[in-house]
Image (cartoon, rainbow, N blue to C red):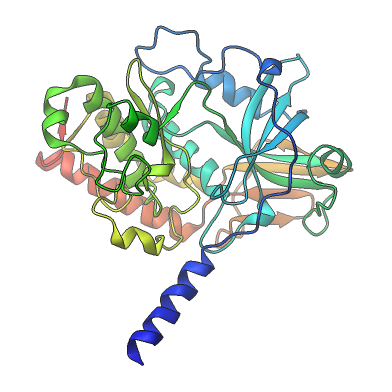
Length: 359
């Protein structure tokens, strides 16, 4: 009887992690309409690439037109992909999740929060989270191009959500395993365990050392509760790792399936050392910089949409989404900021006592 009760509880918890399904989108994005280069610039890359700051400016534009949309498959947490065109004709691909898909255990705002956090500690060539932005698409245009049944949040005439840059040219961890770039777990290349940390390789392989330390630093700082193998992508030359889903971070409960895994990169900083420049930026972080994440974006609501404006003082900081008249703020909560600051000070302590080395 007791075992049955436990099973019921576990099933209930897992079911709670199921999020609102993504809109049913037919067709796929025609890659030929995207503006080259689509690869994100990373340290040491010799291929044509697009700088992180350029992507940020694009995603921050108030006027973006949806050219095409496509499904990104099961397990994408209510996400779809959009091909977006700016007023200058540039067309880029981004992952998109609406604010209405948010749940206690799955917050799309965390994609933006993870990006803004990495800006505090990483140069743009070291980004391990795709650049992200909040956006509110005019309702009629969104219904015409994406979801005819879309409904805005109460009192709004646009569909609010979050865009994350699509990493052109990147590969999945499973593909890397098949190519022999990462070890393959006993359950095969698609196994859920990340199995990313290799202590011997960390000491011997310079490119791997940098790639792993950066991505582990961000999963640790964000307290990513769902850092399984499917959340990581990489560039091969030079090796650069990304974590492409941070929706279960900062305050949301850990995915219960993580308890069954050997390696949890959200709960633990396994990297024994981090780059010296990154360490210096962490040492210099103070409460004021971290508290900036209380306001990630501020939008001014207008007839038929919303425009990005300079953030004002935060209000209602016990909520992610805050509205006051025509002002709309999105940001981390004060309690999340407190937990994040605890992780920052933990890293500062480790750097001070030498238990976290630099290279």
